[in-house]
Every structure is written in structure tokens, then in C-alpha cells.
Image 1 (cartoon, rainbow, N blue to C red):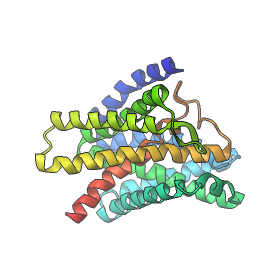
Image 2 (image 1 turned 30 degrees about the horizontal axis):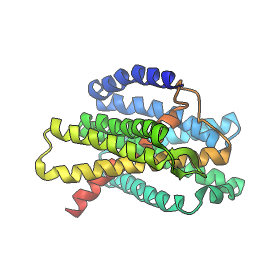
Image 3 (image 1 turned 135 degrees about the vertical axis):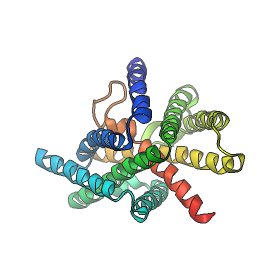
Image 4 (image 1 turned 180 degrees about the vertical axis):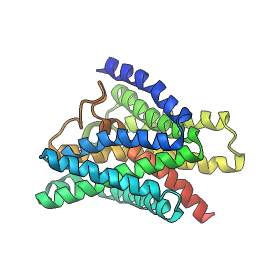
Length: 275
């Protein structure tokens, strides 16, 4: 499993870097819309949409939302609203995870569960796509940074958890995750942020805010993983799909990014509003 995981990552890494630095913004936006279509398809199973027609309709609705956002992307009020709503959503998720969210979601009636899961899925996918597009349009290297932060957090948590993990993070949601793994992920991510500050021309006066926003995005990425685990557990699905050998489905690979990317963008937006 580990060998497949590493091989898949090594094959995808050059493609991701080429897409970030060599695609114009419209092409980058289209590429990530396609990638997130796979995630949307997998989420439809987590939402317990059983018929092919319902799942296709769900993906089509999301595509229409992405198109609407794309044509509104130069309207700051629209893009700012999406990012702020996403940030508020993750603040609510943090609180909800403290109060047995799995049991509460499981107790929902079938119609209510469909509505909740589809609204959550739409917010995750649209806000992630918009955050990546905005970052790419302003500074392509920022997209790479967010990816590196997520990869570092995932890798650090994986290896530190396997070696030192004793204290469970959320045993009712994801029994394999530990606080030691969280610490390992945070430390490796902090190392990435430190190297990034040294290698780039971020003004010294802006470096503290940059580090805080980056690490906040890393911490929230953990909740992105946990949130998907809640819906997988409630729907009785182990992996969202089998698209990526060693990694599961597209949503399994992107779950942390669905929190990190919007929070990273929202962090800068909130900083600019306050200062």
C-alpha cells in the first residue's frame, strides 16, 4: 500500500507542477473543475444518491455553479462572500466535531441527510475550486505552497502516527488518527513554511501574518479529513473511490485541501479587512 501511495504521488507531482506554472488561468480553472468533478461524483455516493440519474444531475448542478462563479469572479463581493462563508463553515465544523457530529448526522432522516450532505459537498467543492483559481490568478506559486502544506501535513501525520501514535484524535470518527500524528504533520508543515519564507521575497513585516495564516490552513486541513470521514462512516463507505492507487478516490486525496485552500485565501481576506 505504501509503495503504491508513493508511486502515485511521484507520477502526479510533475503533472501538478506543470499545471500550476504553465497553464493560463482559464485552462487551470477548467482542469481543476474536471478534477473536482471526480470528487463530486464520489461525494454523491457519500450523500446516498443511489440512481445514476440523480448522481449525474448533482454533478451537473455543481458544474453550473462553477460556471456561475467563473463569470462572477471579477466581482469581488461574490468571491469574498464565498470565501468568508467557507471560513465560517469550517469554524462551525470545528465546534460540531466536539459534539458527536457522527451520531447527529446518522440520526437525520433520509431527506434531511440528502440535503445536508449535498449542501456541504457543494460548499466544499465550489469554495476549493474558487480558492485555487484565485490563488493561481494572483500568484501561481501560492497554489504550490498550499499543496505542499497539505502534503507535508498528511505525510508528517502518517509517519509520525505510525511511529509514535498512542493518543487517538477522534476514535469515533477516524480511529487511525492520533494526536502524535497531528503534531508530526504540524511540525513538517512549519518546516515547509520556514523554507518558503527563506526562499521567497515576503517582506519581513508580513512574515508573521503569513506564517499564522499558513499554519491555520494546515490545522483546518485536519478537519477537512475528519469531515469526510464523518460522511464516509455514516454512509458505510471506506474509501470515496479507487481512482488513485494507494490513495483511494479523488475526494480522499482532496479532503484536506477542501479546508486548507479556502481558509488560506479567507485568512488573507480577513487580514486585509482588519488591517
